[in-house]
Length: 105
Image (tube, rainbow, N blue to C red; front, side, top):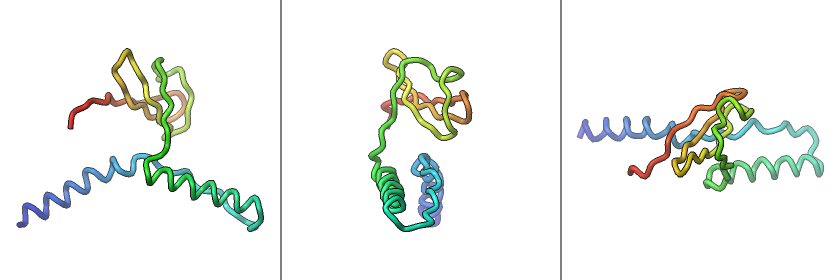
């Protein structure tokens, strides 16, 4: 039983990094609750809903973005290298780190 509980704890710790990989940017401060404030609130809530339900899209490119494409930290794109797909994440400026995507369960 102790091994089972330990396995559940370790499993949840190892998978939590994957689950929370895409972060929402800090929302804008709403100082006046007028039409503009309502628009900002709706956009922020829609973005949070899209992230939590997996409804955001990723841009696809066929050229290696590392060193050639500028982005913000945390930006993600899908790099297609002749049928081999890589998930590329910007770590700042034009530096991208990629991981090959496979069908391994």
